[in-house]
Length: 200
Image (cartoon, rainbow, N blue to C red; front, side):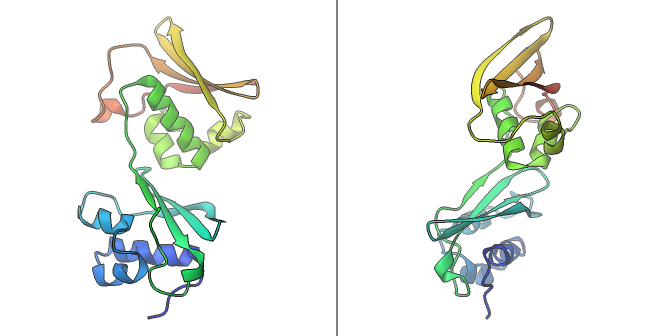
């Protein structure tokens, strides 16, 4: 069996083995206690159509981290030990899986949308926003992506509530409709962000 020498191709083949329920092949790509093995224990629980985030197989301290999203915005980060590329079991411990959720709390909901935009996770962002906006829409407002956006408050009136995040004197405001506690499942849990506003 020949193994890829690039992290991108290696992780794609590991995901293909997992999605195809090919445990013998997956055993060759990933350590036995890895995240894909864990996900295999719950067959049919996850959508398997994962695509690599554009330009996201990045290396650090001997490892590469490849970020994937599926059509529901679930986030899969696979860690590859670079020195094992071209050999078995290069997908090692430290990989993570983060499913899309729909928190009832507005701050948590807005934080999830902010993270989706930062990651370029359009599928997740479109599930959280009323008009199904993608990352390019927020980019077009003039906001700059970064991990240093800081939560300030959720406040409002006149039927609307805004959850504000600031960075270098700029504000991103996520608008919600005021009302009773939102459900965390079902259609009413989705598309709760009415608009995203940028105040430079």
